Image 1 (spheres, rainbow, N blue to C red):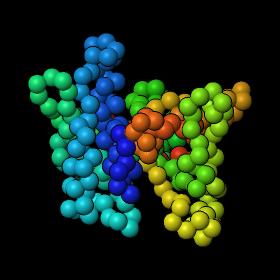
Image 2 (image 1 turned 30 degrees about the vertical axis):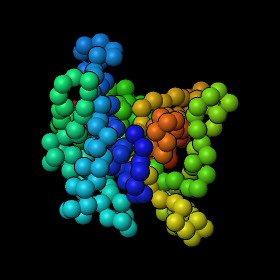
Image 3 (image 1 turned 135 degrees about the vertical axis):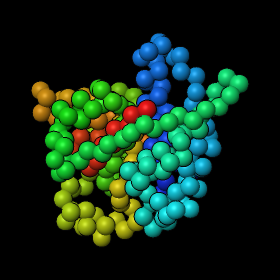
Image 4 (image 1 turned 120 degrees about the vertical axis):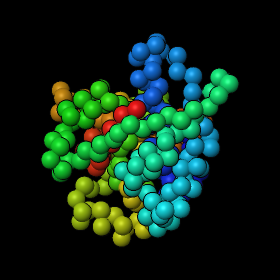
Length: 218
């Protein structure tokens, strides 16, 4: 699903993730490929309008992932369509965000456990101009890992001064991971929302670049 409006990455990522969680849970029970519904093309637009109306989304700041997930709950879920003769709402029963500093014990191993037991999840990371050059498609690109432009507040303030309008927080769907270097490094595979034809694209991200990871329960 492609982001068509600037600043709506959280809206698109949350929509995609709700569908993905329902698909995964259904296929676990009934067999792979048995879930026939997909988030309706209009679903992000409906959510976007609802977020505009109560200022969950603003042009200056976009939207916070947690507030978008709450809005999805208030709307009764994500509208989904199918070849079946009816549409339905994919509900979001609950959600929880985890960060490195909130006492939830976030660590590479914890991120792996969250993805194994509750994935896919919505992740938020700080992106710099070179982020958009990373693409995990093809073996020649598989070793490229996005490592950001500094993880401290001072580093990010400096990046704002160096690249005005080109840096900021960005929401993606996290759905896989790998440990490298004898387990010393962990990379998370994310699906972005800039190119529907490219199914993302997908990018490998150093796990420590992810500021927040939100778990959804259907």
